[in-house]
Length: 118
Image (cartoon, rainbow, N blue to C red):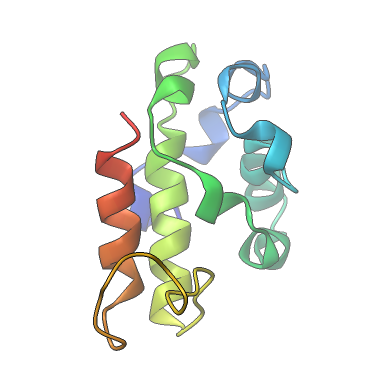
């Protein structure tokens, strides 16, 4: 996770500032700080089963609040990338108001939605 995200996860001291600033925290099953803690403790499976990485809008609020400079949005992107590499998708494009080809990669939708969340 550290290699893919380029972040030092051990720099996080669980100050909760990332969680306190997150706009989507009410809908997450793992709080942003808990995602990092699970990875620190070797519980990546919990993170990979969570819906939290898919809910992250990559708005960078957590990054601006972190006193240690940990870029949680890059970590969430790394988690999504690993899940997509494993063929695990969370967003179901069928029934969507968007007219995308059925074989459109999920990353297209995730990247596109991030541009609208800034």
